[in-house]
Structure formats: C-alpha cells, structure tokens
Image (cartoon, rainbow, N blue to C red; front, side, top):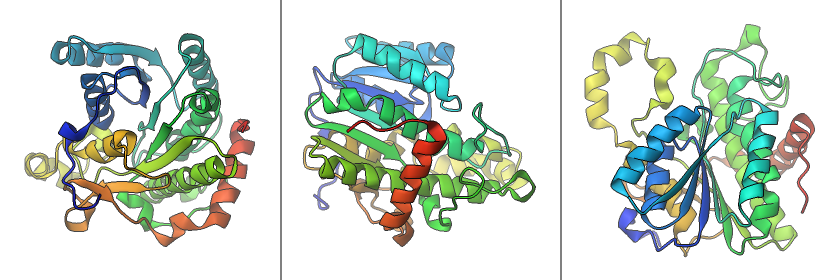
Length: 308
C-alpha cells in the first residue's frame, strides 16, 4: 500500500454510505465533505455555524449537483450540544459508515468550554470523545464503519498531562503546549478505540490522520504574528492546499485496504506534504497505560460511558 500514489481519484463509489464530518464547513473538513459527496456519500456537515455550513453546502452542490448534504449544528465546546447533535443524527439515520473527527482549534488564547475544560483539549479531544461515544450505537449497527480522528505533527512536541482537566492552569498556560497535548490525546484515543473495538469484536475501524502543513484557517490565532503577516503571501504559495491536506483523512476513511489503528500522513519531507501513506506517530502515542488512563478520565469528565 505504501508504494501507491493515492489521490482523490482513488476514492471508491460511496453510494448508500452516510458520513459525518465535524468542521465540514471550511478547510480540511470542507474538502473532505466535498470529496465524499462527489463520490456518492450522503454527508452531514457538523459545524458550529449553520449559516456557514449552508454556504459550504451550496458551494459543494454547485460542483456536485447530485450530492446529498445535510447541515446540522454542533458546538464541540458544549457537551449538551454534542449530545443534542448525536440525538438528531440518530433520529434521522439508521446507519453511520464514516465519522471524521476533524474540527479543531489551534494555539488559541486561554479559554474554557461551557463545561469548564481548557478549550483546546475540550474541543479537539473531549468534544470528539463524547461525540463518538454518543454515535457508537449507529457505528456498531453499520458493518465496516470507520472513525477517523484528525491529529497533527504537533503531537510529537509534548506528552500527556492529567492535571487540571488535562491541561495546566491559566497562570501557566502555554497555547502551543496545550495544542500539542490535545493532538497527542487524539492519537491515544484513536488507538485505544481500535483496541476496544477488537476486544469487544466490533466490526468497526478506528484510524487517525494528519494533514501535514496545509494552508487552512486553523491557524487564525497566529494572524497577529509579525512574521506571519510579513510572509503570508509566500506561506500561502508554499504550503499545500486544504484539498491536498485532506487526502490522509480521506484515505483513512475510504481506502478498502486500511487496517484499524493505522495513522495516515503525507509521504514527503518531514511529512509536510506529499501523497498519503501509513506513518508512525511518537512513542508517547503508543503508551497503552496513558491511553487507558486518558479514556477513563475522558469518560469521567464528559459523563459519556461507551456502551460496547
């Protein structure tokens, strides 16, 4: 599989399949939703702004008039909203083939979610942990379903910490470190989810992906950086597009040859760009003791108990 140059042209026919893409209104999520809809999947764009979601839907339908897209509200920074979204999905659909935990925030200023979690860990990990748990019933009811959790190269920059709701306190907050920890949590979760699928003989796959260094609006909190302002035109020209950055998560979501627990990323220099291939993550991401502890802590914090 590593020798194959995988592109969007390799996406198979997805007619009859249902996919949820969090953050599907922009960036990697938009490109992912567009590609899935272009190949026949019914796509649910899950996003905080329904208005922006509807705009994204219309843009996709102009390109793919035969596409089937629904926009539903979710705020990953609010566990009640996450539960409400999942309840609505389950009231409409009897199956869920693909769940792509894509939405996220990056290096944001210190803030708390509606439930009192540090915002990056709360959005990037805990919100998606709760969402996956609420949708587990549908995933189990759908043979060969998949959960794809989007991480980042930043996961290599730190280790996991279980203090203060998985992050440091405001007075010691470091937004880069907090982001790295949340992205490591994404991987610990994805790998442990696959272990749980295996141990309970559930016909679902859990995979992870990272986009490399694609140009999206995820880095909006860096816009005030003088260096970024000065070199923005060059950065936009050099960095891969969001469409290219979405390929690893798309491959994880649809390639019939994938195996549970795999991690996809770009094949090029330092994994910054290139065709999507199976890669290795940091040693810390494979620590099963940390993964189990994170899982238990996440269930405790979110109140979401997975029903296997």
